[in-house]
Amino acid sequence: MGIYKQGLNRKQQLMFPPSLDELVEEDNVVRAIEAYVDTLDIFKLNIKTKKSLIKDGQPAFHPKLLLKIYIYGYLNKIRSSRNLEKENNRNIELMWLTQGLRPSYKTIANFRKNNPKALETIFKEFSILLKNLKLITGDLVAVDGAFLRANASKNTLIMRKTVKKDLAKIDEDIKNYMTLLETLDKEDKNATNLKISKEDIDKLLTKKEEYQKDLDMLDALGKEQHNKTDKDATVMSKPAHNLMAYNAQIAVDDKYKFIVATDISTNGHDLDQLHNMATRTKEITDNPNMVLTADKGYYSSKEIKKCIEDDIETIIPPRATAKTKKIKSARFSKNQFIYNHEDDCYICPNNQELKKIEKQYERDGRMLDVYRVSSSYCKVCPLKKNCLSDATPNKQMYRWEHEDIIDNYTTKMNTQEAKAVVKKRGSIVEHPFGTIKRTLGWDHFLVRTKKKVLGENSLIMFTYNFKRLLNLIGTALFKKLCIAIKENDLSQIREEIAAYILAFGVHLAYFFRYFIILQNIPKKMRYLKN
Image (tube, rainbow, N blue to C red; front, side, top):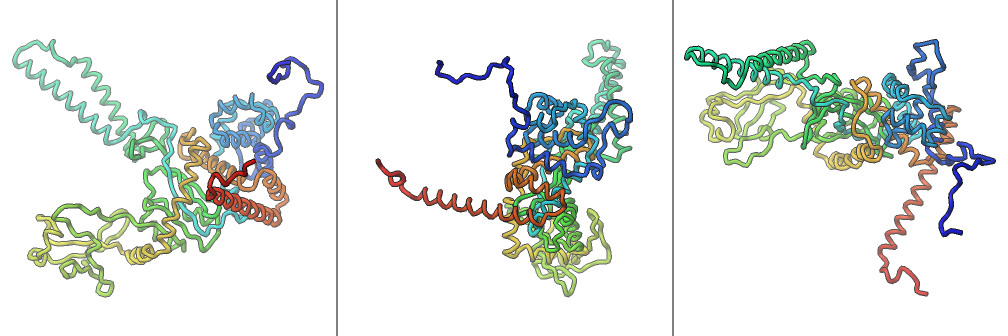
């Protein structure tokens, strides 16, 4: 008899071979996927399949089957349709989930590509389910965005300023060549020793035609940049590099860190996303007292005004209006000019009034009132060097016509309560992106165009919420939840989930208490000697 354990004979026939169901544990995640997907109304989701368009041929794969494959794949860092096909042929869990059916990679890929709206609906319905279970409250929600790489290369990018620069360079090269030819012709010298030939000029002319076509296309599209691979992807700047990307937006609830709402932006900033994400979040939470916070990248007076008009409480730290320059002749900032509400004027550091004139300016979609002081005052002002340049005759201030809203908002942001919320923001919203990128292995999109990217983005955010709920309540309780969903009665399961989470929290608290006590006991006293 050997000292090592012996395995089965691979060629031995088993009298009672195990079924697939026996090979999959009761608490395996595939059982949770199966239970939840079976609760979905596939016709309500309006999922499109090839069979819905073609009546002849063999039966199609059920949309629920393809959805199960994708949820399993995204939970396990397998997103490629080819890899999913490969896993389905060798992975026992997927074999159980698909009941031995083997769709091709093309069928799997088409499901994700053709059903972005259905995937968005699946995410939204799951968020509403979490809200109905009181796992999402909406009392405090934090918003954040991240640049996620698009399925497009910068090599296929056309940028207006780059094309114009290349056209100017070609024109200059052609001009220099023609000038040189003319000079040699006048001097009656042979032009055979030129570094550039007529063939090179023909190539430049061909290239010029291509650049001009690119420029005409940008004019027709009304865009400053266009990627030939993915028309909606744009260049976004990070501190270390630029990349073709989409700006993924999420709103995260404070209670259990579930993602409430998500969206995709093609802008490389968040200035226009506050009201969009606030309304999406409020639609899900249905909480009139919802407080929404974000970082200073979302601070926009127009967006804040929209939120106030829709009765949405926001807490966004203001961006710095001017950077302090460490030079002797530092100029006065706008904050050093005090606005007088009663007289509707500004008071400068030298106590002179800047009065409003009738003329208004439009800037970034906002109408600005103009406040000005006479040049005769500025000319003799002892503080002029700290206020104006030598070429500027008088001081001029601009004030948004709804600036009172921002003044009140600034006052609110200076309270201790607002500062506490801002300080808490990072712990709410930043870790979901970390979990998605590291645990779920997702940092780029596989589909192209914004419409399809919205679908894949919703799928990954759903996967995050799905995984987090399983971690919170376990597979057994989750399957009971799915039964309650089918029966359309969540009252009892809601109480069970609340009791389970409370009991788990108590056990966890005792564990940490014991751990802390143990750490405070000297090592030589932790164990009894025999």
